[in-house]
Image 1: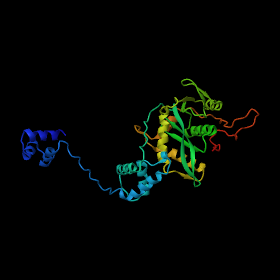
Image 2: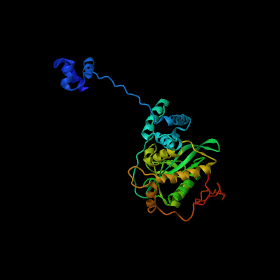
Image 3: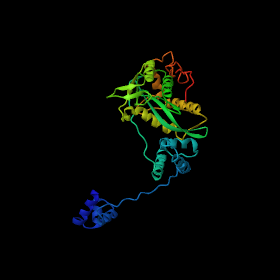
Image 4: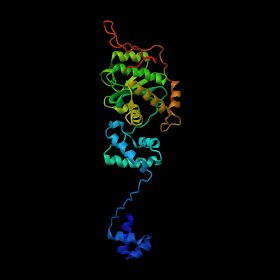
Length: 333
């Protein structure tokens, strides 16, 4: 813009000719003519380059995005996930991740998809804190699409995480998933951070005070950890597990997984949790699995005895099927 102004001034008050202005300012005569004609530079036309390398995968990408329109919003493909699938499922396509990202971005804009999720990683002392959350996801079980409640616990130091799906987010499922997660991690964290979920919190009092359910208090006492609860409406206070849920959804719930039953699905989720231990988180020099080995040395030891999940009524009868939180127990659904 400043150059155009200089050209116009030189033409009006200086050299006075197109050739003279071009010679004095060292620009092409075409630019001088354009500047004399208009004080605003014309917008340059962007040449659309053909996507030669993406052509073998274009139909595959379009099919994936079309299927995503019917998939749950949080179980849709990211550009990176599509690129990873292309590497395995579209032989002969050598398009770089950047090329795939660009093509996917254009196609998503045309289809009206929203922006991707992001999260900020944090660092904590070994074995001190893990964050817990429930989230919804869909899976095709025995040919039928089923809405599931998925338990997630994430270590804030190593970044390791445990996921397990249930048909309902009952208190028994909530407590059982904790026990299975502790055995997965190889120890107990000193503090767990939660939302104010009904499985643990009976009533929110003033400030950080909570009236907890008797069953949760007994469970927490058995495993000897401290419970911390987020301020109502401030979910970012447990941003670590929310970021983990987003990552796990994009990489292991996309496309919508298929399984014969819930046990088969949970076996797959467990394998996915172990696979994620090979990840290298941003700013780290060691994998999640290597960091978890270090963290285990700082965690509380697992208790010898299991915890009875079934509650006993005042008449002495068991209100639910008796079950202990031990590594050999059969999980509830």
